Image 1 (tube, rainbow, N blue to C red):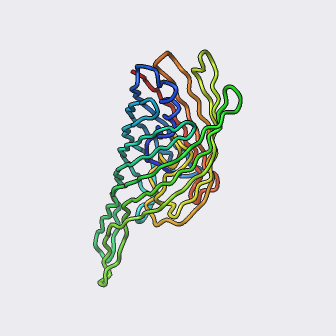
Image 2 (cartoon, helix red, strand yellow):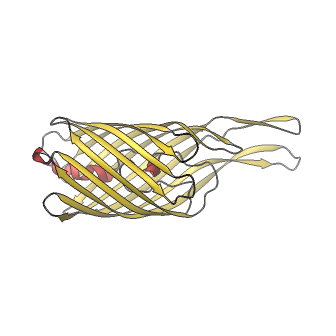
Length: 287
């Protein structure tokens, strides 16, 4: 289910890059990502993000903008099209094998207007609203052999979104009011990564996590870069507590010394809403 939230390049995904290029004079990185989230039902939203990161000797800071288009989610009355945009600021630092990262994001969601008649009167419902999120995580790198790294991680996020509500007045008229849904989400899991090719320029990874939230309509924690929960606009309905798993795989291929192709796929297992699979492709440029 999740994210828009986006940042399609998560904070944790840049930490190894910052370390790998600590002695490289090219310490800026621009990334462009696009993809789709495939639901087991409903329409499949497309998304894109653009980010700029500054890498330091032991860390990084990154600014990202992202957008979701073409999805359908629950409005006040029916399932309606929704678009969303998000701006995120993230950063992280490593202390030996331990890495710490965090982010803050602001966004907005725009729903198609819903219209119905009640007591002979036309009622127009606008469910547009904003979103806010802040969170952080820890990971620890354990070397397994010459080219494999296992990274157990923990993450906690707080999310808040505006939602619309249909309210019946004493006279029988119906109007809409805005309220807020918020929730705390935690995740724990492990990522495995192996490097290969000349000078270990390419990599392949797998990840798995258990995720629990106090509110499934306001959540975005997950297994790192490009997770479903950081991509899809939250449902515009009151949430409930939920637990589910996320599994995924990623790959990065160096096309040249400064250009890389990045691929990512993630899947929810046991989510309260329709299960979702996120597919992402992107390019990153160092300069």
